[in-house]
Length: 308
Image (cartoon, rainbow, N blue to C red; front, side, top):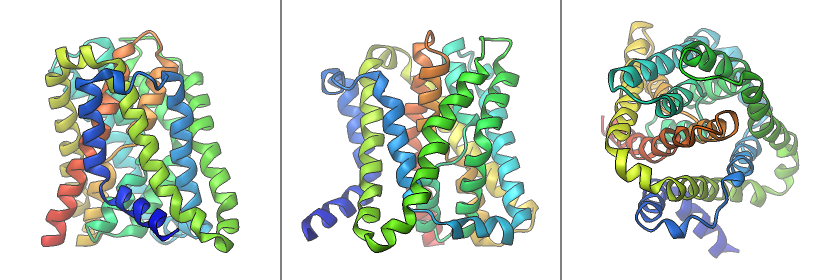
């Protein structure tokens, strides 16, 4: 059993390298990921969100009550800065309807558990980060479809009800089930300790699936969309940190806000692109590239913050 726990911890620690390796292999040797059907994306994301719920407790809601001003400001920033930045970058680079849809979906999604891990590694305010992730996730069924409709309605047909159903099924329901089972895992902590590594493997499988199925298009257009994704992520980090300083937050809080704004639940963006925009195959690509990139950039940012 010790060997299993060691392997799980190794998978968690090597997550950025694992994600990058999986993406590279699926890009150059698509057959390695073609066996994963695209219909598996939503169940795999639900597994990730279930793991998030299993590692949360009702006490994680307390930061929302203790720091309402900071958390509400952070949530407003995430649902304003990232979508608008996505729209500006998409228009500036002349992205077609499919890629523009994918970039805006990334911007309109809430933060994910990766931001909490990176905040912890960066010695940021973990309570603020968890509080923002919790509130953003609860608001996502309403905010994400609304933002997508506002920014995309002139470019593509937006099925907001379908987006709401997808978020409810693959985000809220698994998180709620994980929270309900959290008390059970108090007596069986080994189950809770295994979930993060399963989540990492599920994310890797999602990336392998999308990259493999879209490898030809990625090789043809990947340079431009990768640049947009990088600028989107780095712009979120910078705007989040600047906002924190304008609000006179302390250093730990500024780090948390920067990371929380810059890192998105890109797996959800990929699932939404597939379910709500099935005719726009390339709309799934920005979410996948963001998943790969933000884990690398977040790890580097955490290392920089730690040295400071």
